[in-house]
Length: 425
Image: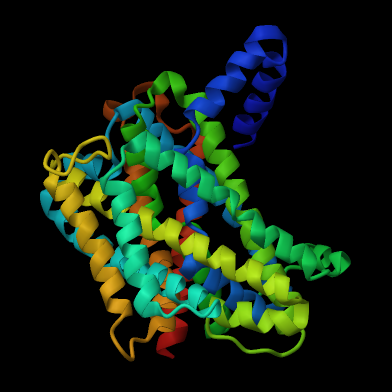
């Protein structure tokens, strides 16, 4: 990874000379999108809830985990993007070709149910954020579902990507609200220099939840599929890689400020919360009303953003797995299975939110924990594929990348097993 980063810096320096710089600069902005969008969607309603709970319950204790998580996210997303530009196929398509239809079928069932739980959590975030502003969920959820459905079904890849990139800008609200909390930066620095580790069920479950919401299984499928749908090729790889690295850093900067803000306000004042909505409301007397509104607005933006992306990811994944047409550049009648699955996910996810007595907090939090639990399985498939020379040719992993990748899988597997053991004790 260090070689990758140093190579990018070297090319940027070389590009500063005359027209070559401006050409490289223009190409980068023309080709970015999949990496930044995929990473930022990961800060969705479930993710914001998980980060809020992490800060409110453990203070600054989990901030240090964002450093290895960022490195792991860059490694994983880079492999996905590389497979996309080289093979021209989505991840589920490659899994079916390499491992067969039976394994792919069961994997698709698990991913559909997990992504449905995640989609439900997004509409729960929409409802929770707008209820803070006095808008009932009976109005906000149906309207939001209709909006995200119209946006995708009536648009194409370019128009949808522009809207999603614009939505990424609004994550800055969390950075602004973090500074409004007036943190003690010495304490923040100390939390990184002296990382806290607690070997108990609660801490391990929260750690896996943070990992699961930052490196979610659906991300790998969406990133690779969107790279293919955008039409990126192997010659565009250097720009795609920069897109992935920038997005991976950006998403964890936002996560840092969410955990930080909840730690220096809610944790220090002993305020207990169950959701991101509780966090937004509790911030008003502690950090100011404007800080509370910014937090709530960020939750709304993130929820709408992810309520669009997660169903798209599910449609990409399942349609590719079974060889059906899957592209945002197709019309509804040209890809009925793709848009049919998208519509099912959107309206089923929104409809469940309107049912009375639904355990929304449990759905939002444990969907992230499930993400963390099944992630190692997806990563094993990815590593076997990215090292297959029949698929990747000269673009297979090098020795250093394989060591880092398998180490990441091992750590995630150990964390997941530890969490399950503590939950059964």
